[in-house]
Image (cartoon, rainbow over all chains, first blue to last red; front, side):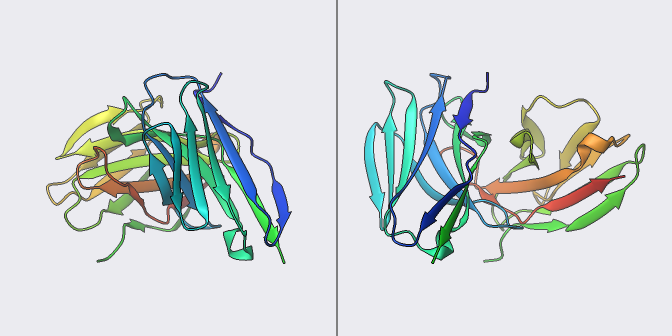
Length: 113
Length: 113
């Protein structure tokens, strides 16, 4: 069993829809949680990171963490075609060692006009 | 500030050959991490270097090695290439690799024939 599980999709939604992306993890040592976005033929770019359980909002993006269930989510409101990308959840090993990230499989998202 | 650069961007090799990939981190960044990305396994951590020392290592065979120079530039080497080594190799840098954002380069796409 992988330490981080993520549904690879693909996920296809109409423009303006609310998108929900999710990951589950098994390692209780994971304390920080990140979401990366990767466009085709590009490297991943950090979207959001969070530590505590609860919600963190940044514009159209909301990251949610439930440590008791080992479950994290990323919500995208008013989705745009430019949001079409692969979304990866990631967690630093040992809680603080950001140099070693464990990634989910990635969810391919397509937002069609 | 220039981003993380990786050279070459594309590479074709044959089985049994060796290859060296290069990564130049963002100026001032001392932590450099390497990842392998494949459709089947996703993004997997290879190793991390900090101040010319390997600080973390993933679960890859000894054919995969790396090093970091005093100017923080890093190289990774894969010897005796196998077909399964075909992948996108990503390099990421951060200030010190602890509780900081990792910035990814565009990657080197390696095809082994």
